[in-house]
Image: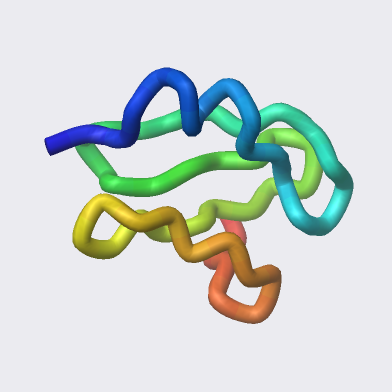
Amino acid sequence: MTISPQLLKILVCPKCKGELTYRESDQALDCLACKLRYPVRDDIPVMLVDEAIPL
């Protein structure tokens, strides 16, 4: 299962409010501006800066 396109349109990076890129193979959302990766667990994006993984 993937994240709905409607949800992807409204999600932004919680740190910089920038655009996110969904990586379906990695189950993650990447912010290239902040160089952070937000995990997607059980089809739910974990949008916490403390949970983000540096790229």
